Amino acid sequence: MKRSVLFFIVAILLGVGLQSCDKEDINGGNNGGGDSGSDTTSLSLNWVDLGLPSGLLWADRNVGANNPEDYGNYYAWGETAPKDVYDWSTYAYANDTGALTKYCNKAQYGLDGFTDNLTVLQASDDAATANLGGGARTPTNNEWEELIHYTTSTWTTREGVNGRLLTGSNGNSLFLPAAGCRLRADLFRAGEYGGYWLSTLRPDRSDGAWYFVFNSSFQQVSFYYRYGGFPVRAVRDSQH
Image (cartoon, rainbow, N blue to C red; front, side):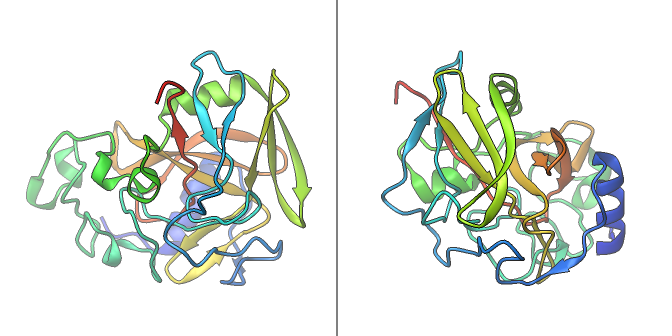
């Protein structure tokens, strides 16, 4: 089960067509987004109506971000607080070899064959819910696909930060900073690509969860190993 960081990077980046992850400055890469340094998002967070068929509202910034252009906090999948090191040895729901102790539907990935058949984040393990409350949660696969399908996406720079601007049919928009990823104690490719956790496991790989990934030339839903550190962008039902 144990994988080196090099294997982790090469395997996933080959799968989604990204360049290799060279190490960036741990304090925010080369585009000035940085970490917010807080566990909760500013009270000035706004919910954006993009005119989606579902009526779903999207937060205007990442969890832990003080401004829409900030990277915010990075979370391993299913964890609700940022940390200094992101690997299997620090992951809440596995031992240091990556044998899983929660959210496992395939015995070969579980500790001593453990399974619980949980494949969707519980509220207590959802970084959006834990840090924002008020009906906030991490989006599902279908909700990200809806966002992609019903918005126009443009690679742009705002306040010196690279990212994607997603504009709905009603003219409202979201900015998603290209915040890179955290592996072990380092920040990789900040300003060049972004990834955002979804709320569900990949069904055939309990060690990986779905995430939305993009760079200047593409965007798609793919998967990453659960110990990787990524931002979370919250959603909320319109009737909440």
